[in-house]
Image (tube, rainbow, N blue to C red; front, top):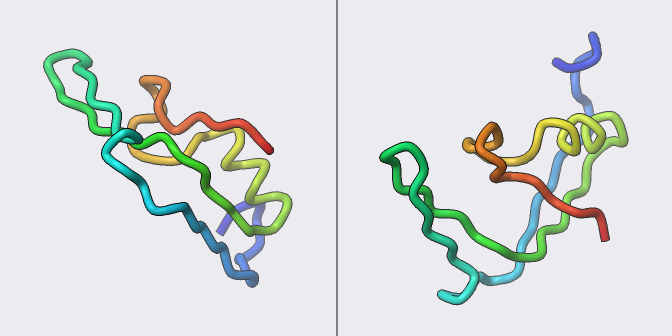
Length: 71
């Protein structure tokens, strides 16, 4: 539940098949982070898209991963 109301619409995230060239491996504070570059298509209500824009996608957002550009 976000914005005080239950989500009633489906969220769909699709991506192109990643290749080995899309993988980014980096080290941060003694941790290995595997990330993937790519084009992802997200279909969701406008409020959810806004929240994703501010929060990022993925588990390493606080280290700068999960950021994206709108196409």
